[in-house]
Image (cartoon, rainbow, N blue to C red; front, side, top):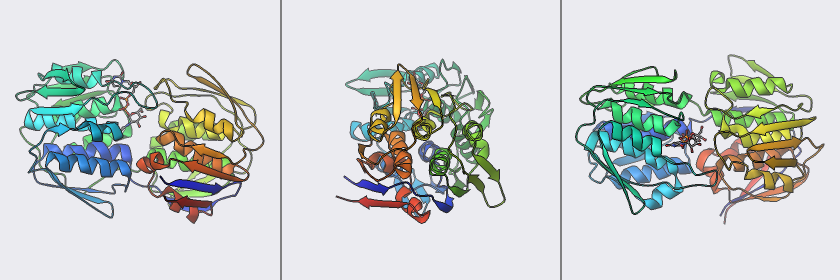
Length: 418
Ligand code: UD1
């Protein structure tokens, strides 16, 4: 298993190109199931999760190729309708084949994702929505087995605005008979990107990003041609916290700052300057940041996927910060590791109290999930001395060549492959 060795406490400098969004790419790749023929997607990041999605689509019978950010999927030859346990257990987003398979082929067998490091993460909302559209669903030996004739439009209300739930239902509804309305749908930029991609394929969708989505089903979709996905807002946010914690001046290229309003607002609150220029988003940090309180919320609130990285930043801030995690019940796995680096963090339920310390110290630490791993990189870049981050396969799921990008900015970071 690869590990990273980081010698921290260095200022970074230069510009970094933000990659395409992982969480936009995953549902967009599964949308190819809906349209027979050659789908072409651009700016797809080279990540472990994208490779897993490729394996899953090939397992269904599709042709999948990846070359320098361009993915070509020909789904005409799909002949298998199962997402097996082995693939779903390594990537929960595999469940995103459920809606498209049901809509296009009337059947799907998808392993139940089960809990994961950050919480239970059920998929009941996906299943209730599909049942309302006429699918018959049973759970058998750890699998969701779903069957239907042509799905029919329905009125669906989400108790919680689930991101992948909204995506599954939206994709299923594009080929349903009649109109589907999803109320209290998720409003993340990745939802809007998926809707735009589906619209480019001939779907009829209104309201994506606004909380109520209306989809009028059509008889068929045509393949997506050269659809370019949005930049990864979480990668951009992670580089912002890296600039802030190391007191650096960085230029983020290919960054959509309007997708990061909540994060940028908090950065400004703690004394970081951000300037949107023609070349990109410049982030300038001179002084030690001050403390701030944060509560994670569905978009447009502060993203749970930035909570761990912000906690690393707050661990060296002036004063005490309170971070409340409201989306996932167990998303503080990074705390014990940050403590090993000298952070002063106390947890009670879903609330973390972080008392800023003068300096973090390098230490051997263990990555436990994707964003927790990112927080350890953020902390290690600021820490005095050497840190070794073990089990970085989590990081490779979601950050494209992060070590290379950081080295270009002047970081002392080495990947040891074993
Ligand atoms: C997506 C993102 C993930 C991000 C999360 C929240 C992808 C591939 N992943 O995950 O990076 O952290 O959104 O922004 O896009 N819930 C239910 N029942 C359901 C579905 C969800 O109770 O059927 C709950 C979950 O347990 C969680 C909350 O709703 O507490 C939000 O989860 P959800 O938005 O579904 O997260 P994901 O789509 O899995």
